[in-house]
Amino acid sequence: MNYDVISELIINILRVQLIRKMMELFLPAEEADDKKIQAGFIFYYLMTTFLYSIFGWSVVCEIVNYLGILGLTFFYQGAWKKRVWISVVIFSINMACFLAVYFVSVQRVIVHQRAIQTLLLLICVTIISHTACPADSREIAFDKGQTYILIVIPAASVFILCMLLYGKSEGITALLICVSTLLINLSVFYLYHMMAENYRNLRENDIYRQQTYAYKNQLDVIMESQSRIRSLKHDMKNHMLTLQMLLRKKDWEEADRYLGSMQDFMANPAEYITTGNDAMDSLLNYKLQRANEILNTVEAKVSIPEKLILHSFDINVVLGNLLDNAIEAAVQTEEKKLKIAIKLDKGMLFINIRNSCQGIAGGKLRHLETTKEDAPNHGIGLNNVRRIVEKYHGDMDLICADGCMEVDIIMYIKEM
Image: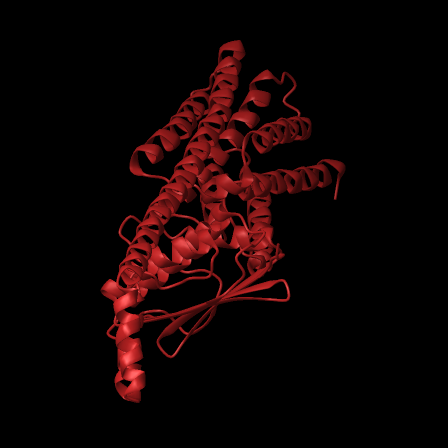
């Protein structure tokens, strides 16, 4: 094996690794799938190396190259529109880097061209990695308008580059067009970054709006409870006289019934949880009020102190998403059942939410596919929950068995 062949093999390894780096900036992957992803990229490397060594730069090789990149995206999570976009933009940048060097090279030394082309691709990947926010970039979902904007630019770039290559263009004009298309494609990632920032702000606004509704609901609950206390206090003299009379008569049963009536009067039907923790009480009472309106069975057992070193925003992300998912799943079943258990023990916050469900395979799950029609804009709540759980060095398990979905969470929380 001569020097040129060895150099070509090494350079193509670097190119494939750069493509993988770019792909993983925008598409999330499961740790368990790492071996499959590795095997996929090895196959892609062997396939492209073999084809380019036989056919050189040709239409067939470029078609296979794009299909290979598109195929690699299926090892990652994400909507199909996002897979198409990332595969087109990677292919476009890869092609622009190669053609820019191709048109500026005078001697057309293949190995030297490949090395410089890969170096240029490395520079592009470095720029992209500093532009993108990894967490937001992986979570962002596309709507139709965003998809059109993001796909049309790299797709048009590929068309222009193909016209340059197979139209036998030469000289400085072709070089300038290649560089221009490369810069335009890099600007797409800045546009994507702005969309991710907007997406993050919208999600945070949704959380805070939900929190506002929850606090308003809790305020109504408190005011109603205070109203009942004032009413009972106003008539307390008469109640005491009645109880005193029953006790003198030794009518224990009637006295017990009378006390029960007073207790029922004091009970606020909208106050399901009273831990003293304002953030937790407000959110749970808000969610449980809705659950009791549409479900048959709702059970909640919460045991936490008034003070927790747990941000109210994080509470809303975790419990808000989990309860919304649980209620939505339970209402679609005949049982319509929801059970919640939350407790703090020795610095560990345990959250267990169990609901009836249907149409979900049994066993331990890593993630759930959304059943909503607008899938790209939904089904990402669990990823947000996982991020908060990891922030508190915790763990989350999803288990489906016997027609029920169960979520178990452990988070390490300090008491005040």
